[in-house]
Length: 301
Image (cartoon, rainbow, N blue to C red; front, side, top):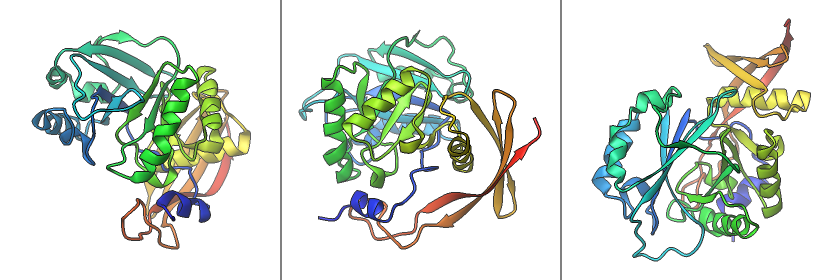
């Protein structure tokens, strides 16, 4: 049976520069089943879910629901909800966590400040293992459930204490997909072993470019430029590179700065991926956009 993931692999569609963009992630624990639009299609009050979605709009904050791996009965509810908030800026990423009796308290947060990296002393600082968020929402795409749920279960069984299922990371055709905090790199086409390698690298402050879809903090042209520089230099330190992008007509110019003083300028163009392919199982074939670095020039330090 052909799926969106098998076709994407067969077409050797690049993983680079496909990460969902967000400067800050707000992750709300909500056990039980999830609908395709989980904020308004779960045991979470749909009016609250819609209000949270409106509050985050335009702030750089992306909201998703999370739950621990395992079976999820339709009656599952949570007396208290764990909340993770993660800002993924290079050089100063942070994760805060808290338990809330009522998720409605999240509406009191300053979403613009969160998007800009100011947590307002929310909760407590997360100290410990990297946080793995594996997309498992089969209501959005069957591949996420068929491939993501076993991966989340394998990681949890291997002793990784900070493994969560998450509602949506984008890029179903790259399943199984995983976002790892605190750095906010998204990964795709993982196996249990490669996912464990990603978590080990993250714990050491590194990324794994071979499976990376990009750092969610950066817009997609900057993600493409970062990947090109990592490919050129074999640099894997997660916080070694920062990007500054500008639009220049029909392309982008992205200046990439290394912490050691090296600099590069990448020219990035957007095009339609050919031939057409479904971006998700059950959808009509389309031509998703791709970002390609057409030139990469070293600049004087």
